[in-house]
Image (cartoon, rainbow, N blue to C red; front, top):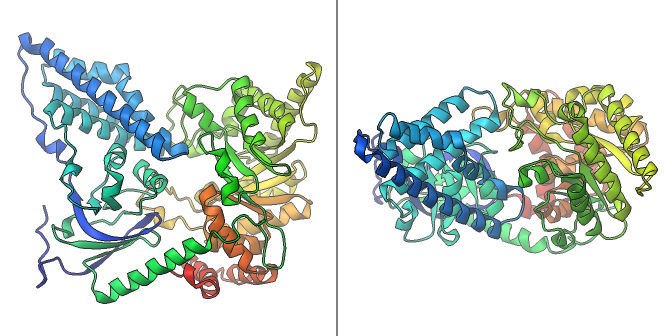
Length: 598
């Protein structure tokens, strides 16, 4: 362990600024609670007598049953507190508890090698971690954290450590840790946690996703904060910039209070005009749609000013059911979505975007590089029965309202043509069976690989609209895995190459007379959204909760003002992405001062 920090004359560690990754939006200031998971240090190891093996196996069974109950309770608590895809994060833990290989391994270490139950669990966890760690797959690597989280809980239950370390918290605090597991994140009483600050972690880890869903500010990847803090210290955390200040002085406190006031002022003003139609200040229409899945409360879309569904992530139906949904089940889900929308609004259904970081419980086929592997359209074109079931379900649901179909991960013209042929074939089947559908259903593609940009003029002639998926477009353009904490800082939406590809896509779409939207995370950043509108996108789609903020910014500027902003950004090709971002941010915060803290 590093030597403890030297205290200053106030009895606290000296003031120090740490920079990490902004994981979950929000400001927090409060005392430190250092969480150290010491389970690995206290796992006993001893040989079990042959006569005691049945009792040891029974001890393991009891701990498994207790752990199963705890995980089910946490899953129920999570479902009660949030809506959205994050509710499935604990599914992996529960699946592992039912995995015969995991259970057989634990029991084998006990019965054949006469290990005590605690050590048998730790050996099994390490075996799985070694297997998963050898795979170059972000999803599988995230499972390492899940299995370690599960193993720690099993060992604590075997040791009789039924109380959580967080029961020692005496007042609301900022949790400082090396890293926090998903079950620990959920298990902390909400009223006791002000924020999370961790030395490790990525922007797409399960704990980070949970922090966002729970509305808890968080900064990850701080490096050495745990070794620098001690009892009595205070922390100032900014979940928007990734900055953490240990024991701030008076100037830092005053700056924090100003930021907090601006944040409250902004929150209050967002209520004004959020239900107005999306448009620029000079009246140019700019619809704001929502990115949703089956867990999104449909009744709440209208409350945030959503003007339709720009992206329905259909793959989360499969994830929730843990199997492929039937044609009838899919039709039911899609019909529910479109019926929830008022007249004039449409729902864009993205067909199964499986693979990459979204693996399916009944079809886990690890690949060395899943983001470049058999994912999305490639999988569906190899499994056309699955594809046709989904296409038929979407067509059948289209009689209940306005539906658009969205093809993800298109990289070649032959992929698009194959999909359109299958769609036409499904239409013929339904006609022959006398089943109605919308004959004018629109088809679009997600532009999310550079190859699609370079043939966008050809693709545009065979679809009705484009939807730019910035998440993957940035990743594939910059060769950056945003889930990798070592390189995630290089994931830059305002990189000149990314902006050039977006501009080419918009130009190709408009030249062919079709519309183009953006449904990636870049659309939810108010500064980048303003840039995208200035570049000419026709609509934006984002998480429902972010619509009021982005709409406020767009409604503040005229189309010519946003176009000038975009022209300035595009002219800075020789500048770093950060310089381009600041060139957008500065004039916007000058016009809307309450955004200056973001």
